[in-house]
Picture 1 (cartoon, rainbow, N blue to C red):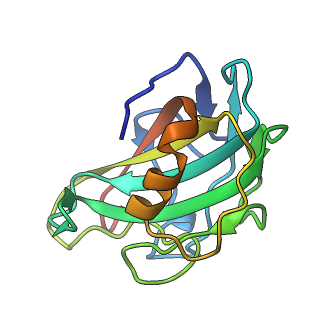
Picture 2 (picture 1 turned 180 degrees about the horizontal axis):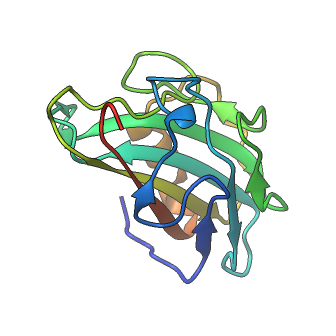
Length: 159
C-alpha cells in the first residue's frame, strides 16, 4: 500500500493519542467501537475508510503481520466523525473472522499492545461489498488514496 501520511488529524473522545483504550472498547468488556473524529482531510476527499490494526500481535497471515480489529469503508466524504458503536459505513472481515469491530484483547501476559486507528481519505466515494478483508480493501482503495493518518491507543489485558 502506498503510504500517504497527511496532516489530517484523528482524535477520540474515549482516549488520547498513545493513551490507554478504555476497557469498554475491548474484547474484555462491551467490545464497542470508540468514537472517532477527524479534520483536515486532503482537498478533493470524497470518501473515507477506517482500519484498526494491532502490529504487536504475534500473528503472520497472508504475508502481513499483526491483527486486524476493524475494517470499515464506504464512508461518504462529508463524514468527519463516527459515534461510539457506529452503524455508518460497510463492515469488512476482521482477523476474528467476523464482520464489524472487534476490540483489543492481546494474549495474556503479552504486555501492552499498540492499536492504530487509521483513517484513509479517498478521492472517490466507494460502494464496495460487505465482507472485504484488509488486503482486499487496500487493493481496492490504494489508487484512490489521497492521504491518511492515525490515532494510536494502548491496551494491556487485565488493565
